[in-house]
Amino acid sequence: MAVEREVFDIGGHAHFVTFSCYRRRRLLDDNRAKSIVIHFLSEQLRKADGACAGFVIMPDHVHALVHFNQPGMLSRFMQQWKARSSARLKEWIKKHLPAYAAAVDLSEPIWKPRYYGFNVFSQEKAIEKLEYMHDNPVAKGLTNRAEDWMYGSARWYLLKRPVGVEITSIS
Image (cartoon, rainbow, N blue to C red):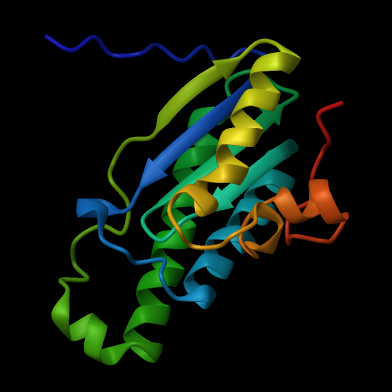
């Protein structure tokens, strides 16, 4: 029997979160789709008074390292980020990818219902998670160098370029 991981949403801890597209569909292959997810990450962080140390948007899943000053914010943040990005993605797919929209059932969710959360208690673990995220597009053959992937925070860390989300550095 699988044991569910317990996520403690208490102040002072960062959270490494991962969530996937429903049925692992590659709904984020298009660059504009990835940009929509980034837009709502930034917007929801502002609304939740949160900070982001890093993120990467992949064709079928998302990783982020986030932190909130107030306890109890993670679940609501994730719910809002996923719900708002899902609604916009469905609109965008219908309008800009009509052939794809006809091939998939857009009454189904964009995202799997749950997310995987991992509490990050140390700087060493945060750096490990950042390196994992930043290497993800390289490992999947989407780019040769992490800093060349336009849909993640590696460009901010390695080139000091804006990435669409305010990044709070892990130092």
